[in-house]
Length: 193
Image (cartoon, rainbow, N blue to C red; front, side):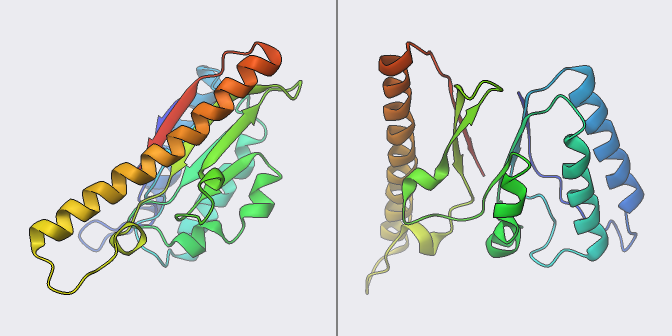
């Protein structure tokens, strides 16, 4: 498993475009995946530097994902970070899933959508990924009139704890079920941004 984050594709430095650097990074990453025989690549948010990435940044990202199909990497899990547009990142979700690229861009009404079971070539579960995208304040906290800053912060912390606990509970239930059904010991891997 190779766990990465914060690629920030498309970011400029002092007004200078850095597409060559990003291209080199992705080339290096693909080579490392091959060299280390990585089965699963995790990308824990901030794939892009802005919510409206340039066409060049998008081309680098999608080209890289396509190139991974020719490597030993069997699964990719991508979650949105605070710099990513959740809807933009998840727009090609169904298409990417056909290439074993799983994208979680935002909080879901169904927490189970944030628990991804990865299977080996024989179709047996081999890993359970808790894929929690960047949680925005509005996603996990209700606003009440007259709240103090301390009240808001306490609600935010409780909302974060409750969300992660809910996702982890579902993952643990799946792990227990796989152990009972097939005697499998499946690891749970958590990722968030």
